[in-house]
Length: 169
Image 1 (spheres, rainbow, N blue to C red):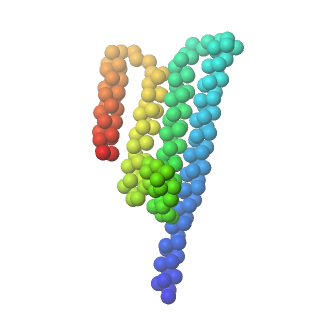
Image 2 (spheres, helix red, strand yellow):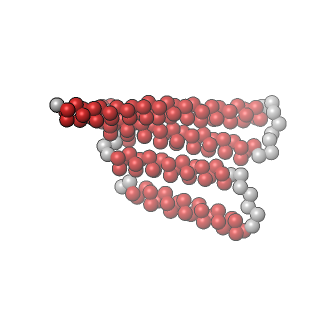
Image 3 (tube, rainbow, N blue to C red):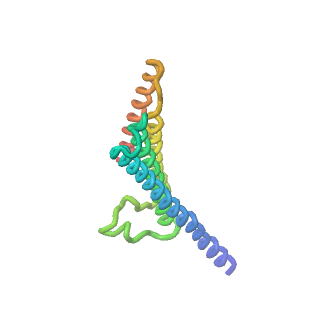
């Protein structure tokens, strides 16, 4: 009887994962809202410049691209949080019926820790790539060697993304 009670307590302790699921989803929603507000700010400032309400800033185009890429970065991190939350729920609590059904997407169906890890890793790599390009926008190249390093880093990213896409198949 003690063994059955103990095993029941251990099994039911898995519900503590619901904290990570709920707060992971909350974090994802917050990131989606913040990224959307960033896009809105870019849209408003662009509108103001177009209508000559404010003067044309010196690095206007770079700032627009950086703002949008920054929002994409936040959206991707929010996707990581969603995948993490859905995966934890499916692994520790229950399968999500809508994810398995005919109308559902198999994108969020996760059946083991390796699948969860792989899906999260791929999105994190995309976050790093987007973040890299956001930082490169404001980089000043003083020498041809710096430009060569930049070209090599882009080539390394392309090769890495190519290998990453082949791992999933």
